Image (cartoon, rainbow, N blue to C red; front, side):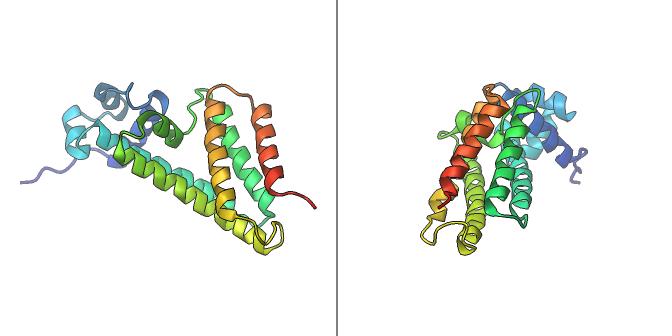
Length: 196
């Protein structure tokens, strides 16, 4: 008879997000995950296969949540510059107002696990591509609405903004203050939305 799993997988993944986000992958032990999830070592291995398997599940869950939050902000009916500034400011605030300055789990994983971890590379790459696609859609609407020149390269602009987001998260994690990061946000946006 097959034994049913005796723990909440979603709760375990959520608890693992917190541990990996706070400590990083290498500094997190299986015992840390056992204590955070309240799930025994054998059950964690049975459910996720390994620490790497649980990290993948946690990273995917984090990506789903963060891209959904960003996507909702980008759907707002407002001028593109305002929409994009709102997104960038929200990410700055998420970093600098966090007492632990954890940064972004996607960015943290990229700097710690890539390029050697192919699974993490795929998840991170997909997350960055999804962000770029969502931002490019805002920029495309801006181009069609006359907020950007007709020949604006929205793909390159979106890539610039995704790169800016990653840099803001790293700088924020490293202790940069909000004022300094918002100056970067405004400088980048002023370069994209040049007034005639």
